[in-house]
Length: 116
Image (cartoon, rainbow, N blue to C red; front, side):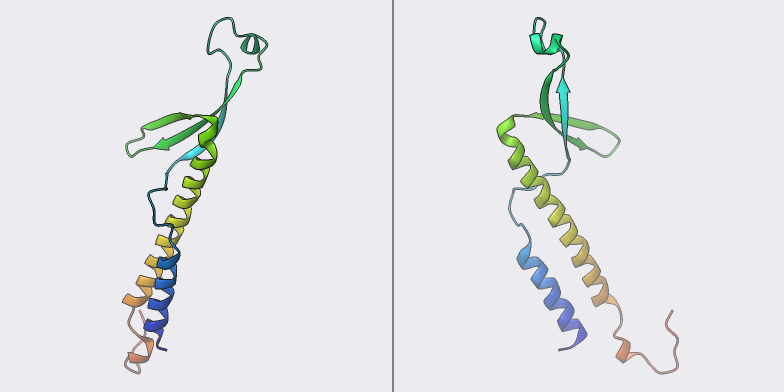
């Protein structure tokens, strides 16, 4: 099997394993504590507060959005974030394989010419 064929086969194996679905999400999951959401809250008055999961997403131009999450959605959001990271890593690897395909075949080089 030629180098190009091996590279194309490796690329196809990556494509076959991609989490191809709408279940991807970019951002960071943070844990925050709210300590004064309403007056008269005994937990907030004691300084305990209430834990809250927040999805933070940064956009070009420096703007950031934060989404408060319900407790029952946190596991789903974690899975979607993992899918995004897997997809991003796979895309980077596929790009590197495609770079290899664009490089001239070393066996096809003329003798005596130095590689730049």
